[in-house]
Image (cartoon, rainbow, N blue to C red):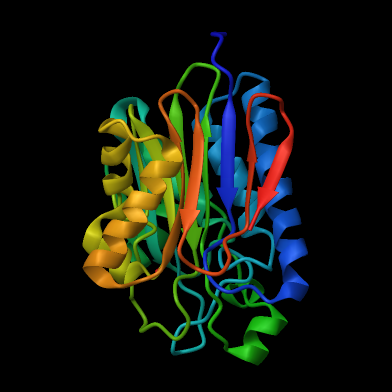
Length: 285
Ligand code: GLY
């Protein structure tokens, strides 16, 4: 085991949060960050930690990913997810996925398989079946509150992790945007847009995908790290670039090659939790 100090940050989506759910969302972020940090503490990989943290967020119905995903214009769940390791620029992603409880786990299987980076819709389902990956009843992903409200449930969830070996990884998962057309794919599963990791840094974005993908925001933020900005400066500058070019809103979390954490948003809220050198989980919104 090498002597890098692990660090991890998760987000629960950028956008307005009603006060009565903010504490629960922060708590959900904390549970996820600590699940990932435990893997890092024991010497596990950033990739495994990022996947585990995002699984915890997907399983929490408060967040717009996995169970609790927002509904499209047909009242169906269609989810996107991506995971990327800086080491070897290995990436796996799934899009417009309907019957998988944890899309990030299937994205990881795409990464491990190695033939492709992104599988969508029926092709992703066929891949899942070919590897005996369990499918679920799509109705089990729809929570009662979501069905009642058909409201604009903002968000996306994500994690960025830095392990004891100095490796970085990023993972993002989402139900997308409310009332989207069937087949719409957002920024989250697009490498460089909502998710990116290389030797300079790793990033997960949240916000309006149609804007984030136009500016290739995650790659932009990593380039800013490469240019010498610290992670919080890079987050702020990436948001400035997004606003200048699209006048849109978003948030992002990132870790640089030294394991330093940063985050930023231009929305009213973005629940985050991070754990760094002292092992203590810190939350912010
Ligand atoms: N950022 C998530 C989406 O637009 O789908």
